[in-house]
Length: 227
Image (cartoon, rainbow, N blue to C red; front, side, top):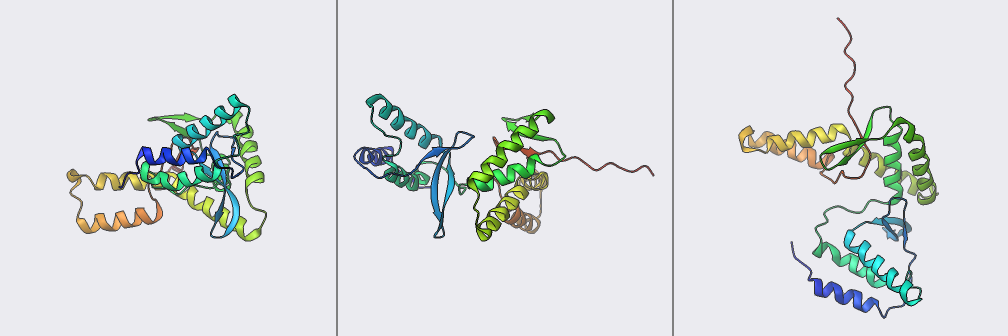
């Protein structure tokens, strides 16, 4: 992967200090930076840009603006977004940012299941208490109402993306990725044709993605009826 030099990126920020473009940046309920974005010529739709480097940069500009008494919150956005376009060369980021709406729709579907729901904290699972679910559902519904499109075609696409994301985060997909990981080990001695078929299927339907800080469904095996 090519690397974009830190000096070059700092030049982008330096240019931003003299720019006067304005874009309404804001933070969502999870603390991520949200930027209105055109997708395939439609929109704007709110998109998450939770890259820690970007968050720290924006916070620095806001802090600097507060200290000097100047409204820095909405300035410099054009060059910051230019910097975002260059960030993939500086930060390893293989995944397309998920829209605020799609993320909220998927998490809402997760919270409305009857199965136990948890977040991964390192290697540990942190489960949500039954008493805390209603408040989290209300929070997600608020985000959906504020972020999702009122246009039927766009909303249908958002719902479809959320369903696909829910599938990728499902216990079944996590099991498939784990099975593939075991098959790829030399000790498994998996035939190459079997490995290739499994890898192609998993990459198509269950691509690897970051599962940290999102609600996940725990698989509960169905009860076995007595003979």
